Structures are given as C-alpha cells and as structure tokens.
Length: 405
Image 1 (cartoon, helix red, strand yellow):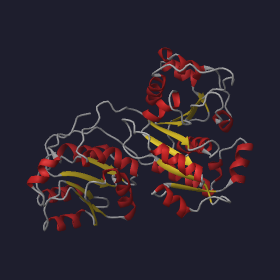
Image 2: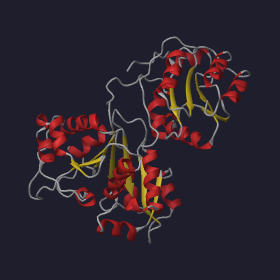
Image 3: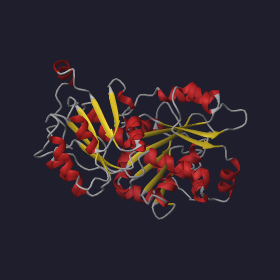
Image 4: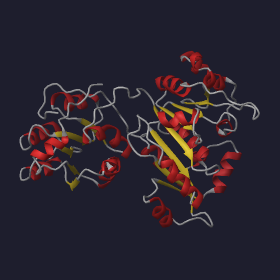
C-alpha cells in the first residue's frame, strides 16, 4: 500500500497561516458525529465543520482561503465527479481532499483516487473507527503503516473487572456480525481455563487452542481449519477448557501467528480477552484494530476503566477504545451523569440492566441478541461503532489528478 507524500505541516503553516488545517463540509448530523468522533484523537488541530453538501462547499470556498485538508460530502449528488471538477477550480491544487458519499462500487472509488487525486473515500453510514483508520493518517499527515495487518479485523472485548458481562457481550457481538451482518467471524476465547464462550455458543471444544498457544510453530492454515469449531454457518469458535491445575506455557508470538491465520479466512475475529499484564491476552490487545472495554456503573469499574485507557495503543489501532457501559441503571450504581463526569467522556454504548433476559437466554443456550429488544439494539450499535457495518477498504493510489497529494 503506497504512502502519501506529505510536505512538512509546520513549515507550511508558517508560510501560509491563513489556511485552516482542516475544513469539513458535511450534509447530515450523523456523518458529522462520526467524523468528530474519529478525528477526536487529533485535538490539537483546529477542525471547522459546516453543514453543507459539495455545492455549498464550492460556494463557500470561492470566498475563503483553501484549507490544507478538506472533507466534502457528495452523497445524493447526481453528478459527483463533475462537482469535484468544479471544486478543483476554486481551491489550490495542493489541498488534500477526502470525500464522503453514498456510492459503494469500486469503480467509483478508483475514479476518485486515481483520476481525481482524492486522498481517500468512505461511503455512508460512517463510524468513528472507519474515520480514524482511513481519514486519520491523511489529516495527521502520517504515512500509512506499511506493516498494517491485511485481512480480517481483530476486535478485543475486555472487562474492567470480572463479572461485568464482557464475555456475554463478546459472544453476542460475534453472533450478530455472523448472523445479521452476514460476515465470516471467528470467536476467540483467550481464557483457556475458565472461558465461557463454549457454553454461550453450545459448542464442544478440544485441546487444539492450547497447542496453538504453546507451540506457534505448528500453526498453519490446516491446523486452524481443524481447530475452529462451527457455531453457525459463518461463525466459528476457538476455545479450550483446560484443567485449572494445569498452567499454560505461552509461546512468544503465538497470538500474532494465530490471528494472522484467522485473518485470511474471516472478516472479523472477536477476542474475549480478559486483561493480563503479559501473555496471550495482552498480545491480543496489542494486535487489535479496535479495543472494547466493558464496565458497570461502579466506582471500582470506573477506576479500572481509566487504568485500561492508559495502556499504550498498538500499531494497528487508529481510534481510541470503545467504552460499553453495561447494566446501566442497576440499583445502587452510579448515574449516567456521574459516570460521564468520572470518565471525562460519554460511554460509546449504554446497555440497560436486563438481567432476566440475558440470564434466561444463557440458560436456554440462546444468544440474548437473537430475541430483539434493547439488548439487540445495543449490540447492533456496538457492531456499527466497531466498524462491522458498512466498512469497506480498498487500495490507495493516485495517477493523474485534479488535486495533488
């Protein structure tokens, strides 16, 4: 994947201080919210938003200096390519243009990036994770990581403390992505002694995962194919139920080897990964494209979420971890306002206290999200926020262009 050749940002700003770092013209509130969330990591930049489509952007840019980076919205425009050509007549050619639209075909993407020199394109609905991963490097003038993992996306689900519902949420997220979003999903339970994913998914498991973790040199595609137990047409489980008295001898690099093989066959790997300072779970956290932290509205959970947020991001992580507040409204728990005040930010997903529904589903060997209702809606929101809905990537390469990059 080729790099963008960006000039030095500081030097540019000194010579042209009138040019804004980032200007966004977006037609709807939902897309603007996703952009704000995805670009929140670049808080030092002055980001200016305007509610307008590309025609409004063209009109506005006729009377203002060209920004260094520009985001425009071509959704619903009858002739988006013609509009972009009109845009090129009112901005300076060194502007980096990012485009948001509603067309999903690869041919349109190629026209934008190859013929028009657009830095990147995303189609609606956007998520903050998508924006951070694809628009973030352009906005921050970073080179795209050459070593970024290809293939499926690794999501880790970690509870702030034991018993907060992280495993239940991980299992239901995997089920939703496989059954509703129709993606190929691998559910990976990183707790080889006491993991509950085999119970949640009603799947018998053997000793294969232990062998993969202790002897990564043995792991190949055939090994992984035999290891993954079918939990549905598009859902496979990798888990173990090792004796509690038997310690695990982790082989360095085992997580990277296993995840690399899983990425070749699955769109998503959902890892139920309890926090550990080292070993299998910790390596999974470092490899993840998206970390998800689950907590309940208690002081102990708030303390531990804040500590989890201090863990350094891995090389593949473009956005901050998603925070899932589970059992909101539980008797004796903190209020939503108290949680937000303590964290200094709002939780991304809030799941109401629904103990009977979740427990009844587990007793019957069913996924709680399969019954619909508020729990399913929350899992759907989580799948969307984690990039599981509407996420599409393609190679970036410019040939001739209206905008130089």
